[in-house]
Amino acid sequence: MPVGGDVAPPGIPSGNPTGSPVPASTPPSPSTPLTVSPSPSPTFRERLTGRPRPAADDQPVVVLHDVTMRYPNGKEALKDVELVVPEGDFVFLVGPSGAGKSTLTKLLIRDELATKGMVVVDGDDLARLNRRQVPKVRRKIGIVFQDFKLLPRKSVWENVAFALEVTGTPRRRIRPAVDRVIALVGLTGQAQQLPTQLSGGEQQRTAIARALVHDPRIIIADEPTGNLDPVISWEIIQLLLRINELGVTILMATHDAEIVTALRRRVVALEDGRIIRDDIGATYHRED
Amino acid sequence: MIPFVAFSLTRAWQGFWRNALMSLAATLTMVLMLLLLAGFFVLQNVLLASLSYVEQKVEVVAYIENNATDDQVDTLVATIGAMPEVASVEFVSRDAALARFKEAQAAQGRQDLTASLDSNPLYASVNVKLRSPADLDSITTTLRTDPLVRNVLNIEALVDRVLTVTTFVRTAGVVMVAIVGVIVLFIIVNTIRLAVVARAEEIEIMRLVGASDSFIRWPFVFEGALVGLFGALLTLALLAFAAEPLSQAMVGFFNVLPLELGSVGRDTAMLVLATGVGLGVLGSWLSVRTYLIR
Image (cartoon, rainbow over all chains, first blue to last red; front, side, top):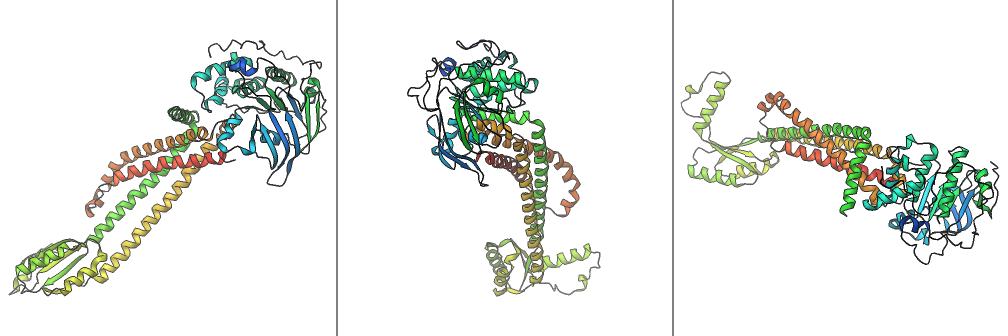
């Protein structure tokens, strides 16, 4: 059992998500697509690590300019995409299957390179990175998947620590960092359990803890509630909202119209590879 | 650097035991393949030793004129013995030749008829053993041109046949070992690949959380080396146990052919270790590479 893991970091609301739906009157994010929102202070990074955020940080976390993605088989997954995500934003990425949501995600983590256009994450033009620099950019991005992608033979704690171990973090820094994020997602009591012993919601919270442990600038969640029932989905959304309040930008691809409509955050709608809508507080109706 | 190596070794060790079934399967495949390779390697060596033995039997016999003096013969023997192609030279005097003839007759149970001779009809000879029967021509020519030499026994036809057979068997042996080597290579590399592919998700997660290529690659490479090392050690243990009873069983064979197999044991051990560890490393390197290149 990690020592001190049951102590939540100062400034982070304690207590588990209640599971009750967030009221539709939740205040919308103050951000707009092309302006930079003031990030809450002290930031998540400061609260989590005690390190101050680097100066001159007004740049958007994500910029896509004129991005087209054509796969080798000729299919155009994204066409002329323009997207700016300022620091601290909470963005829903919606659209039917095959609209390009997953491709967009892959471009951001540089799993794929755009055929045309520019993809910038935290100031790095991904097309100009050489192979050795790619992992460093990925450490600024936390990724959460629908299918959790946890290692079944490792405990919750080990799964989260894994992300630090394989990036060469010294052992003495791993323990406190892992204990903090596990406390943040409310899994301190289950830290030594294996993923198979957990509920779906708990597994997803483990994945979120792992995404957070690198102290990322942005969390990209690809259908994080896709495998979860509505009540558990709301727990996950509340957790993401709380992380967003701590200053982490969140980009969430989803099909869940109820959640998108209720939260009234920025919604970017993709269809057939194009952005057809980019509104704050928008509603979303599934058409597929 | 040292923390990185320690990390990779620890991860390799964990990876091996946490996927015990897969590691065991890979190690056992490794053992079987290495046994196959070692078996063929030992066979090949026995074969080569047998061939050398056969080839050493080739002996050039030059008969010496009866009027040759001892000094002249000594000079001839010294000259021939100094030639690089010559393994050994032996002078057989007329009396010795007769004695040998008698011995050979007696050994075959024939009646000794030499008593009825009034004088020794045999010539003295210089018997030359060659390092390789391929050098027969040059030795024969040298001997023939020497005035002391009466004539040289013509064994070219025999030597040709021996050479044809030994060359064929040697080539066949090398081809067999090469084929077995390629089979072993593919099976081991594929087995290691299976073990890596079974953990594709782990590699995927490592990439997603921003692990650098070397942090992904080296634990797997060390794990491949570990499989190779375990496999090789197990193979050598099995071979060590089997060696004694096998040579006992083949004692009759070895009595007929007094082979020189001095360093085969050591060579086999080196081959098994190098192949096991080498292919383990190669297999995992290649397998992980397919996940890293993107």
